[in-house]
Amino acid sequence: MPDFDFDMLVIGSGPGGQKAAIAAAKLGRRVAVVDRPDMVGGVSLHTGTIPSKTLREAVLYLTGLTQRDLYGQSYRLKEDITVADLTARTRHVVGREVDVVRSELARNHVTVYSGTARFTGPHTVAVSEVSGRERVIGAEHIVIATGTWPARPDSVEFDGRTIMDSDNVLSLERVPRSMLIVGAGVIGMEYASMFAALGSKVTVVEKRPGMLDLCDVEIVESLKYHLRDLAVTFRFGETVAAVERHPRGTLTVLESGKKIPADTVMYSAGRQGLTDGLDLDRAGLAADARGRIGVDENYRTEVPHIYAVGDVIGFPALAATSMEQGRAAAYHACGEPVGRMHHLQPIGIYTIPEISFVGRTEDRLTEDRVPFEVGMARYRELARGQIIGDSHGMLKLLVSPVDRTLLGVHCFGSGATELIHIGQSVMGCGGTVDYLVDAVFNYPTLAESYKVAALDATNRLRQVDRLDQDGDG
Image (cartoon, rainbow, N blue to C red):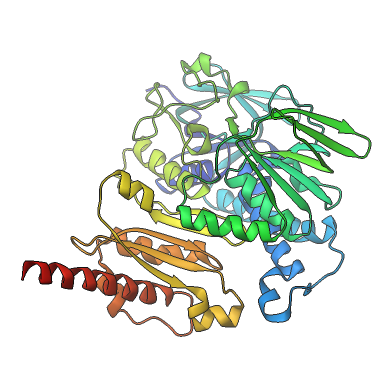
């Protein structure tokens, strides 16, 4: 065997890269990570998941939005909310998280190189360090975890202030009075709800006929209702023809001829794999048109000793799944047995209110010709819902009438992304709706919604059974 500098070299220190590096280090391997000094923790920590969710928390707190059912529609914790108010919390959290990542890597004796990497061969990478020095590092296994960046249409002149992508939005100089968002995907809808809560007049333009098509239709309709209540305007089935920058803002021209003025325009039109500068061809690899790298079930690329994990390999492109991919890739590279990632993966969407689900939707079950019954619980029926002032939230269970297992769980409202894990656990263990009926939940809690929804579903199933028996009789 050649004498390599490291057993594993990881390019990128985001959620996938971190977990791959630490997993290999814990198995006693010599590990190194390469990333830019200002990007330790990756896109997730600097411009993606962590800052956007922290911004959301600051928006909810400062606007007092979730308390208005209790204290009136004019209730606000702070009247004139500035960008400085919002970013103070973000900077604090990001700073702390960077320290945590650095500490974890140091504690596990992972060598960190500050700079950018490019392949010079199948086992070698040239690292251009901040100092200007370039060094070539050899590794037995290499993990690509470079993540993605926002896709930018060539026809649009981005300036990062009035016309921007989802990365630039975190460095706005002031809260805009009006904003146009191109794209009604997860990122677009998260920012649409945040800026609408801040009082910006938001218009969403989407070429598809609807939004968040991966979600339950009823929950999407509920979100749409709430956002319209916050003065969000939706333009579905519309395509942007041009965006003009003017001294007093922007003018977006749609292909239908509509013209929409706004202080700022934010594009949320998908993301592109960060692979351009890697010189993949020198390692015997290639990326697709979206910059993504193909992998097998063990996250190996076409070159067996090179792995790729996280957003750079495409769907589902979530921090949570990226972490598991990184760990699984490291275990496989080190010859360590690793269980398959469970097919039941929760999806969390941090709109206001938030959405989370696991399993199939009603539409998908209908398409698959799988019978189901619905059990519903509304937060307004729960004591905890009244206490926290959330009268709009709901939990929906989709239950099989054949074996009474859960086929899907869909939640909308406060704490949805936390609550979903109860349903995920029951589904993952093959539990039935009867477990939820018989279980005792703390009172008053939002988790109690599982029992209410389970009772609703079993009552419906009982009615069907009675009619079936009458028919047989």
